[in-house]
Length: 141
Image 1 (tube, rainbow, N blue to C red):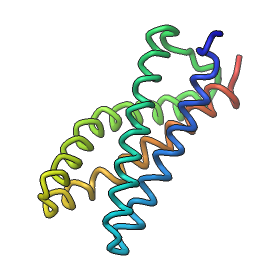
Image 2 (image 1 turned 60 degrees about the vertical axis):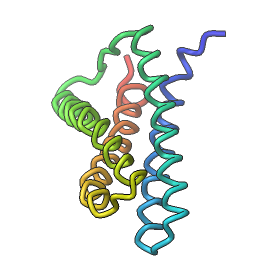
Image 3 (image 1 turned 90 degrees about the vertical axis):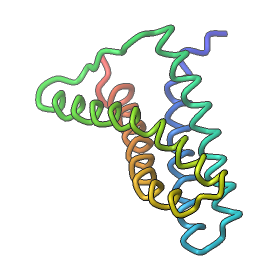
């Protein structure tokens, strides 16, 4: 069985799940439910790790997928894609450091970094789904 065709929708599901878990984690920490926050954030890290494994596998096998949209949508798509990729590259070490601070119990620095990590993580996850929809469902060759 060839799994390549099912990887893009699977990645979109993982991105949606990560965004949901990060949002729930934020909801719980605002209500001082640190145990539920921890469960959500560890789960988001695991989901994002699975995402990265399948993302790298897919692109190692398939390479880049050309965008089929034409006209004015092209700069919109590529601007979205560029911001997504740049912020995803920044997010990776940011999340690792933020999680490491929480593990070590340095919650004041954890909170300071999490204020940056949260919106970036949400942006990267949501734009990942939008990019998937644009490239695989809305603008197809």
